[in-house]
Length: 229
Image 1: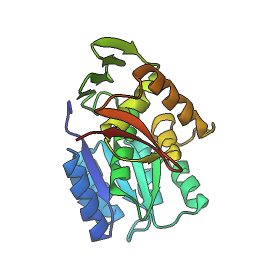
Image 2 (image 1 turned 90 degrees about the horizontal axis):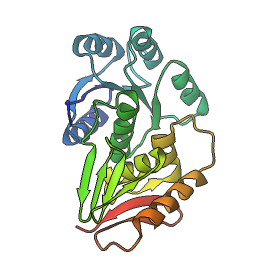
Image 3 (image 1 turned 60 degrees about the horizontal axis):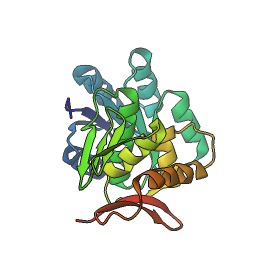
Image 4 (image 1 turned 180 degrees about the vertical axis):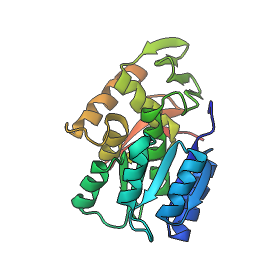
């Protein structure tokens, strides 16, 4: 990373807070935590985080008010967590300014993927290692190009972002919906098969017979970037 990203976790459940902290620090982020909305806002203004992970159900000050307060002056991205999956909560979260929304229980790896994608959309200059190198393949997000067997391949933006995202999480399976939200955004209204079309184009350009890596279909689920360890 060009700059270590600061993540503020506002969550009253100590187990979930510890779990997020463990995975976020492992992903290279600086993590600060608060167990209620009031403390969370105090810490927000004190440390100026790059992203906030905010639980909906909290004591002392609910998350809607916390998110609205953040949005009054700042554009810091917010990912909301909830134990309820009702569409009302999701719509209200977006209405008060949330950038993404995840229902508990969740896979911490998915949360890390969402954090990375939200940060990339909010501030492309912060995030990333930008270059992924594998045997016979180099993916350069900054220059939006791929070097395959020493030959340069130019991919359209969405194909490039999709390939880079999958390759950033080797051997991790993502559903079509997850990929749509990460690459096209949560408000994308197109068809899930959009992902299939882009994957096919990526395979056509990169080939599908490399012994070290490939974009693999997980039938009935989605896709993963499979790497031979």
